[in-house]
Image (cartoon, rainbow, N blue to C red; front, side, top):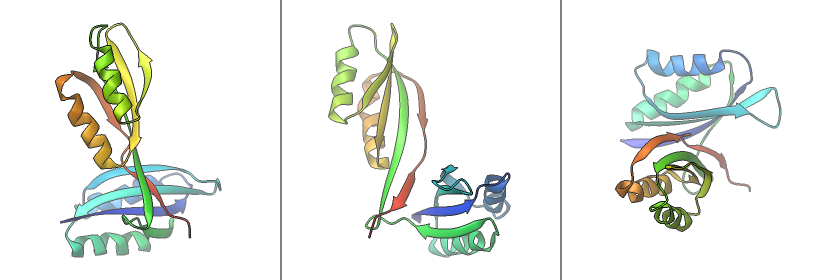
Length: 159
């Protein structure tokens, strides 16, 4: 099993996400994560799709995506040729007595405290998937009330 991250340049029209996710579901493929937004050109959106599968399955996914008329360009984002990041927002129980501990862990990972309430703190962390996973593991001694992750997004490195 291998994880593949694809960067798709697609038409910025209604239903594109539905057609692409439909391709995956019709064939029984699972999407690990997907992120999509408009590019610098409002006619196009950039979609980052992460999938895991056997080599033959991953090749088939790429070929099927290339057949969709909404898909203009497909690029595989590999470790050496791209920059991939993920954003996580985490709400942690942290009363006045434990706040400094949470701040210390956040500082190690260069995370930002973006909201403070009487009994909770919201932390924003950006980094690769391994960094986000490691940060969440370090919060094991705290109660995580809410957690949301964007999924991977990335671009090819400049030439």
